Amino acid sequence: MAGGRFHEKHKNQLWYLTLRQFLRHRMAVFGMLMMTAIVFAVVFVDQISPYDPETPDLSNMLAPPSLVHPLGTDELGRDMLTRSLYGGRVSLIVGVFAMLVAVTLGTLVGAVAGYFGGVVDNLLMRFTDFALAFPRIFVLILFAIIFMRPPFSDNPLIVLVFDALYKMPVARVVFVIGILGWMDVARLVRGSFLEIRNLEYVESARVLGAGTPRIMIRHILPNALGPIIVAASLGVADAIISESGLSFLGLGIQPPTATWGNMLKNALDQIFAAPWTAIVPGFMIFLTVLSINYIGDGLRDAFDPRKIK
Amino acid sequence: MGRRPSAHGLRMKYTFILRRLLSVVPVLLIITFATFALMQLLPGGPLAAYENNPEISQKDIERLRHEMGLDQPIHMQYWAWLKNFAQGDWGYSFTTKRPVLVEIWDRLPNTLYLTGISLIVALIIAIPAGILSATRQYSLFDHITTTLAYVGRSMPVFYSGLLLIIIFSIWLRWLPSGGMHTLGKEFSLIDSLRHLFLPVLSLSTLIAAKYVRFLRTSMLEVIHLDYIRTAAAKGLSERVIIYKHAFRNAAIPLVTVVAIDLPVLFAGALFTETIYSWPGMGRLFVDAATRFDYSVVMGIVAAIAFLVVVSNLLADIVYAILDPRITYS
Image (cartoon, rainbow over all chains, first blue to last red; front, side, top):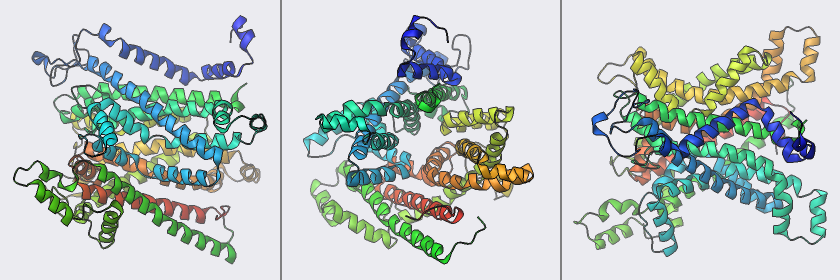
């Protein structure tokens, strides 16, 4: 690494060491560059593309790839590349927000289980194990259809929640994926808390009179952050696959709003007439998930204290 | 291995297995009860179909609700369901009017056939690939294998499935794009194998990618242990060392991984069945869920929970038998 004042000033700080370790992971840097490109394209698609993602162009239905439409058009004449990028907005937003829900829940469950131990730990972890053992896609589908209908209850709170989720498909999918994705994070966080809670500095904080919430949040959580960040990055990939899976089955976000999943479903319905419609949205999912997985692996190495040189 | 377990050890083993068997029951009860309770959240309930029917008054619906026991507290309803379930009465599908047990029985063998063969194919691919890439670490083969495993891990099965259809059914026209056999044709082995090929390929690559990564790591750990060096120092051939000494120990945890990843296999099967119009349980579940066909959904969840729990249990038992070091607590 090149020297310079920044290097001199920060060379012993943990975050700096972590960053340097991350940048040494070639595939992680590749993933980072790919993700930057994808996010850039998705954010600025309305500036880049002359087409609208939802307006049909009936003179150009199912056109194969050409100079005007580099990746062809779908059954309503909409440009595939444009739609894939707009679809990326929805898929990435769902991925990030579902991950946030999952990580928050998982950290909460894991922190409580790890910090208090004993019966609480036992109960929470039994529940986590059992939630992990069951094929998640079946529960995802079940949850997805439960919230796809207008509310049906006398309880005003349930009506409020159901109604909101029913009317906002993106929020619904985020919610459903988020509340079913916390188990891995919970296990990791529990492990770290179990380890850290008995360290001397935690003990001294307690002696100094810090309350339980303060110890958990201010003293233990920052030192458990590494694995959480790794799990969070991989969680985005997981959530994107779950969203596209649900939308692929027709149970996620519905057309005309494009997402990678519902575009693939559309492609399956007309696979013989227009095979090219399957290639782009799927490739976008693949590329995003691959990049995120590489980033996650790079982060895992970077946060591993044994590997920092 | 090779050492015979003592009588005491054997007894420990049996109590361990028995205890694990008994611990399965509450898990199954919790899964089915949770699903049952969730279904109550669904709008409408089993009578939803009648609610928009002008011929049926609200009063009739109330009467039906009472007759069907739907106005009772949820644990009572669950208890009634459980009693019937245990006696083989799994209810009727609203859409086909056939017994749920018959519906599932029609589809379950197809799913087990698809997942079973995919699992075997995945192991046939993953075991040699994992061993070779560990023993020739950082070779070209290792790089290609790890990259492919990475690609496989990031490729959703509903995309690889579509790509395989595009390549093999549309461009090359070699293989059919869906179904279990050609409609209206007499059964032939070749025909059914041709239909099996693509679904198995997409499902097995999905899980093979995971197994390869795991086996490679686990082999690398074992290879650096002392007893392997001893074996090499004794002058045993590389073949014997790798396949007889190293692989055996590296493969034990693979049993657990296969069991833990069963949900992935079933989830993969659900998508594979949807893409290739395979008449299995996954597709039945999606269809039943979209039609709010409660009893079918309930039956499938119970069946899958049972399969997963039982195979986890089997893996534990196999693990306990294979690995003499394990403690039975």
